[in-house]
Image 1 (cartoon, rainbow, N blue to C red):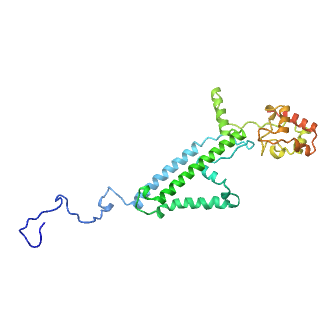
Image 2 (image 1 turned 30 degrees about the vertical axis):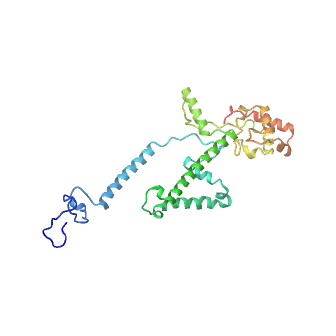
Image 3 (image 1 turned 60 degrees about the vertical axis):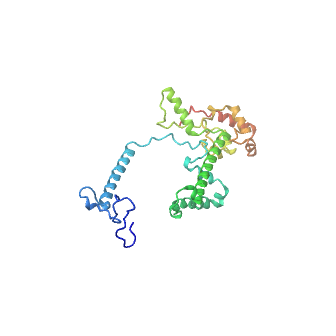
Length: 293
């Protein structure tokens, strides 16, 4: 490199002379510089995208109308079920069981805390504006993320485990599993795997029997309904196909599998005699599925 005004001094260039000197920032040409090869984003390109989206949407709607989703089995209002949401809502389902998220605090549980959590997730790009991308260099954001993931996993797992324990304690089998097993049996027998028509309704046998009044007087209708179709408890139509008179008497006196409390004392307190209760059990044993409405 030359120093001062010494023109005879040897000049040494530092760097690679093959690298061309830049002219600074060059504004790229717009679409008009490529006639026939490009177009304006708004409205030309965007309009085409919209038109393609409309065609896809119309095609999707035509498909859903021409090939609707198959319907499952008719709902059974008398079936005993433990309500459960879809798996992706299990953590919220479990969270709402806690005292600080239900009862007097239900607004806080349904709107307050979830609103803050999801609102923070939406605002995360605006709140955490640091240039660092390595997670261990972002302790606050990384800690909140790991805490959120751990909470979701814990609540989801706890909700599912509690549900399984409830099924074991009550002896219930989820209805969809019952339907799958029934469909498997039908498939093995060469029968249709789904019900395309609803079964005929089982009728009440001997409606005018005096036992019907004893049934109402013993407050059985509070769980099984005045029409024996059930409500808070299972339907008693066709109960004679499952239990005989002696078994029904035992259920009345001792309850059933932890799901039904003994009703003998209640029936006696409401004025029924032992003969009335015996006749009631005999009448219930007559309720078989042969008679249909």
